[in-house]
Length: 123
Length: 123
DNA sequence: TGAACATATGAATATTTGTTCATATGTTTA
DNA sequence: TAAACATATGAACAAATATTCATATGTTCA
Image (cartoon, rainbow over all chains, first blue to last red; front, top):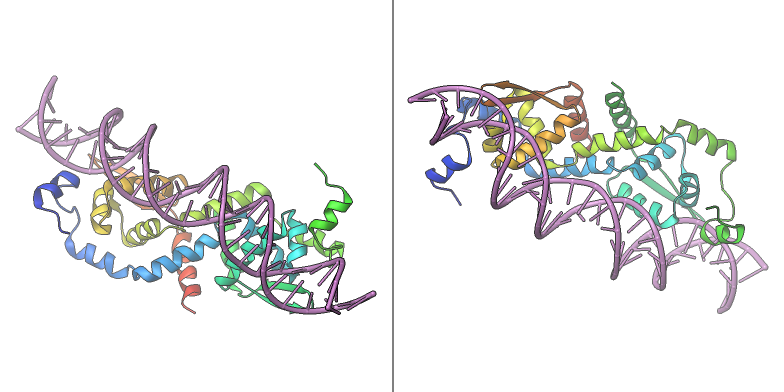
């Protein structure tokens, strides 16, 4: 759905300010749309305090759902829902021991991602 | 609003599975609530494809609002709203040159945050 | 000064998302 | 096998959020 020239004039600046080759270069660096969505989804996981708390709790050791819930003073259901998201994103893994299911971090990136975020906000 | 013991039993496991000192240690590592909110807000910025695209565009060079909008094929208003959020979080800065306002990255962390995210999703 | 341009912003709308509640699934033990 | 326990999950609801539309602010130039 290409707009006509008159409309384009009305909605944006007269012409692109920078050289076209620069724009092309910039767009060349841009990841594929699919990767951009995955990237946004990845950061979305860290964009909630409950999930961050869970990750911090698991930083030291594995823990079962019930203990996480008690530690964070939240319902089992809320924690379980969030663990599901963390697992879907491959940030945590779990193992069953009888009735209990223990969760732990699945990836070492997590530590550095969190601490880099912390670095930034402490400036 | 402390619940009574009977209710607590109903809602969670009989007693905490791990040693209390471990839980205390885990909670000792936990950042302050205020920092947790700031951290979540920080990652929230990267949790949207439009903002990620803007950051990628600015990775190479500064650019005015209008050119960003044209490059990403979005409205000037949408870009302006998102630039406001990026600026509030100190991820971009701007300078005025006549009518035009040029935006650029405010921080070098951004590159490494983005590439660490990319690393993770490409596994 | 007025017209054209570049950007910012408030309100409205649609979509996404986190928690709660009720209940289902799966395991152990008496 | 029945009861108790640990976890998972679907539906409902409330809160947060991204975009659009209309319009305001601020700059330049004739």
